[in-house]
Length: 494
Image (cartoon, rainbow, N blue to C red):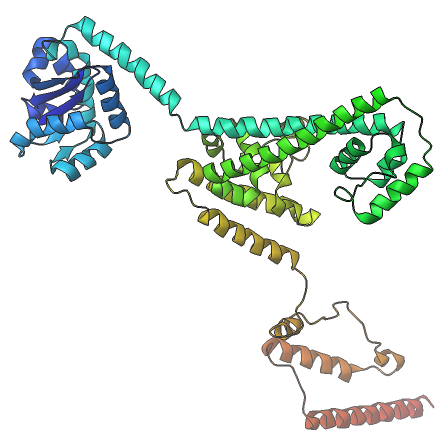
C-alpha cells in the first residue's frame, strides 16, 4: 500500500512495509513512538518539493476544494502509476474519487488511514529526509499567510457584507429623510402653512417648495410636471389667501438647499434599493422570493451573514428581531412573541389577525429551507422558493376560506352532511297521570317496549296493528272486571 501525504513543502509518497499493523488502529500510535519504530512501518518512496509559495498555495487551494492539482497529477503519474496494483491511501475521500476517475487508481480512505496520517505527521521530520526542519517551518508559515490572505480575498461571506451594509445604509437614509422632510415642512410652514395640507407626498412637497420659493411666485409657476392638475389649482388658490408670515430671500435659499438635499437623498435611496434588489436575487434568490428583498436582507443583517442565518432553526428565524420581547416574556412568564422581522413579509401582512401566527410559523419553516438551499446549495435558481411560496399561498387561501360553505357543485353533499339538528331535550306531557284508575297495562306496555329495544337496538320497535287491538281488548276486560269487583264490594257492604 502507498500513502499520499501532503505537507507545506511538497508531496510525499510513503510505502507501507507492514500492513498488518494497520489492523490494530487503537495501538497504531505505539509503533510511531520513536523514529526507529516509524521507519519499520513506513518508508519514504518519493518527495516532490514545491518550487515556491505560489505553487504551494495553488496545491493547497486545490486540496481544500477537493480538486486534482497539476503538481499532484504529475507526481501520481510519475510514481504511483508505475505500481498501479498498489492501493493509494489518502486523507480526503472526495479527492480519492477524483483520482480514481481521472487516473484510474484504487484509493483507500478509512479510520485506519486517518490514524496512520496522524502518526506520520508526528514523525514527519524523521521520515522525510533531505528537508531541514527550519525550511519546513518557514514553508508552513509562508503557506499559512498566503492561504489566509487568499481565503480573505475570495471569501464568499464578503458578498454578504455588501448586503448587510446596503440594508443598514437604507435604514439610515430612511431615518435621515424623515428628519429632513419634517424639518422642511415645519420651516416652510411658517411662510406657506396651507401647502403642507394640500400636498401630502413628501417628495412632491420638497420639489414644489424648491420650484416655488416665495409663495407670491405660485401664480406664475408651472407645477404640472410635479403635481396633478386639480392639486395645482388648490395650491394656487391657497397661496392667494395664505396666513403665513413674510420671510427673506436668504431664508428661502436655505429652505431650497434643504429641499435639494431631500431630493438627492431620495434619488440615491431608489438607486440603492435597486442595487440591493439585484444583489439579493443573485445571492439568496429563494429567500427573496419567499419573504421579499428588504425582509430577507434584514434577516441576513441581523444574523451577520447568510451562512450564520442558515445555521438557525426555523423557530429562531420566526422570532428573529424580537429578542427583547422574547426574553421579557420568558422572564414574566407571559406569552412569547409569534413573529419578529418576518412580520413585514407580504404573506404575513395580507392575512387576517387570527391567522398571522400560523402563517408566520409556516413561512419561517419554508424560509429556513430556502436559506439553507441558498447558502449551501450549488444551484442559483429560485424554483424551490417559488414552489414553497405557492404552497403557502394555497394554505393561506384554505385558512381564509375555512367555514365558508360552497353552494354549487359538491357543496350540496357537504350541506347535507352538516344538516342542523336540534339537540335540546323536549319532554312531552304524559296524559296517563290524569286518570285515577291504575294504569298497569300502560306500565306493562312500556316494559315490553324497553325489552324489545334492549334485544333489537338497531331496528326501532314498531308494534303491528293487531297488537294494539289486543291491548285495547285487554284494557276493556280489565275495566269490566274492576267494575264488577266494585259492584260486588258495594253489595257486600250493604
